Image (cartoon, rainbow, N blue to C red; front, side, top):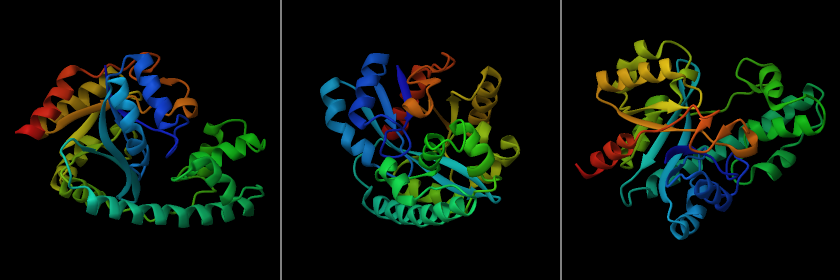
Length: 277
């Protein structure tokens, strides 16, 4: 089974890298992409455990970029060898921007009356602390009833607690992935603000060369739309559950939301073939 989109507790998942590999074995996932936000730490830590377990581990990352004043996520996959030195250095710059945003977010939440500190969030977020960790604190302290409410009312882009984080432009994120020899895939396109079909010429002109057609948020209709766009624009197809463990307990590794996901074998075969072409 294939799952090219998962997260560890090195970003906003709940499983350690070693626990994620164990879950992959339990679920029957033998080709696993770790795509933590703005970090390779989860992938780096999981490599030995994956080798011992016989899981083929795919080096990946998920970047938050800006397009038309909205956040658009891009998945980077690196199936070749080497070439990541400069890209890893650039990712460290993104991490610094994230830390600065977190400090301002903690201040904003305190202005709204919530006793939340950046230190508390960082204790949960390890190397990469983000809004989900602030949401956890808000739930634990009884300010909101669940993570969804924390985002809807305070942490989402349109919510009153949101603070801006400097994110690279979509074109910049794609360029860095491509320059490092990777595939740049549009993550969960159903979440992109606007009509993705109409945006494709612009996205492809920026260097996009893949699209995540298979995702836990996609029904059969959406998947067919994105497969059609991939065919029309000559893009590779990627897919994965977007597994976060206890952070999103309704999403299972390999099979998505209530079993709605199955990434076909040819997705992996075509990615591999493109590397070797």
